[in-house]
Amino acid sequence: MIKELEHDVRNIKNFVVNHNNALAIFNRHSDLKLLKVAETRFASIIVMIKRIKQVKHALTLM
Figure: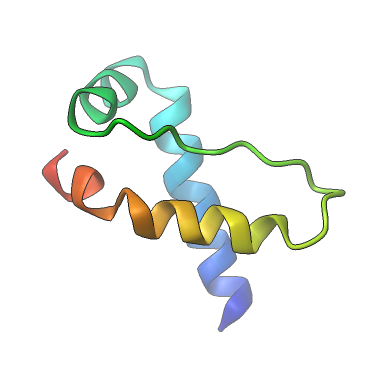
């Protein structure tokens, strides 16, 4: 279950960050940025999940 959530969060972040139009739309709807955290950081996936939760409204407006 957590691995699936991690996979989904990474896919969302990668899609938005790697597509210029998606990133522009996201930036229009959110003051926060999606975080890019290092694999070696302790609990980095938890940090990413929290940020995705904070910007959920902006993501749904896309």
